[in-house]
Image 1 (cartoon, rainbow, N blue to C red):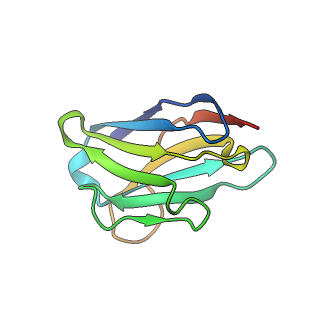
Image 2: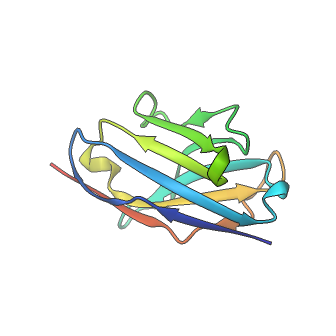
Length: 119
């Protein structure tokens, strides 16, 4: 088993930045791919960004390309989502997730962290 805990959410003005962290513990050696998703009120959860557990082979939703960047802090066994040039439409609960296979559903999920961008 593994556990994921997000942190770093908060309230920021449009154009500002936030750095989300996803601390992983347990059987992280099983992780093949990790990702960030978000869910806004009244909307379905959507993909934001992903990478391998080593921080390579990154991919991004079109809505965040050029503004968000995913990376790994090896020393802290943590995935990071750097969010710049934030927009009100980025407001959502952000979740990190990890899976044990190259493709398929994600096996582990964090509890989420709220990001609110004011206009």
